[in-house]
Image 1 (cartoon, rainbow, N blue to C red):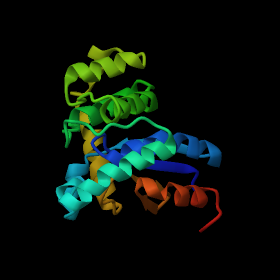
Image 2 (cartoon, rainbow, N blue to C red):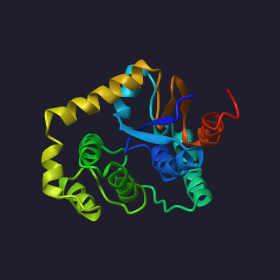
Image 3 (cartoon, rainbow, N blue to C red):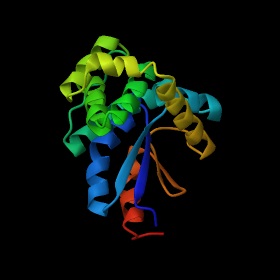
Length: 198
């Protein structure tokens, strides 16, 4: 069985943030590695006919309470952002650029925390630059890298790959071709990677 967990996530996704706070520890328990693959959830929604939970009033109300419960369960900070939904293109490109610079996980976690716990707006270049600096990266260089055609292509490719493989929301995880969708599937994902279920 593959010991690599592919983690498709979007900074604008509440449950991507929650899952991101847990996925590296989960992988370590399983002797697995994580490939962080930012993608554009909005494009996935368009391709699959899905829509964000907040688009439905009752579901949106539930999402707010549910996310707060999960945050308390995980022991992580959470404050629903004032700017929602988020245009996550710049932030997602920045995560890819940070990965190229060897700081992908650190930057991605700091980015998600900035938006989902600290009320910052990562669609703004100055916020991205500050997050980059907080993990030891050159903010100006990272911002410049977000305009690199290779980075833009990587984000487009991740999004297209996710749709092709059956994703319809975030977070989506793959272990080989086995797909798991949602923060609440982490226990099932862990059991699968450990070989406890097939």
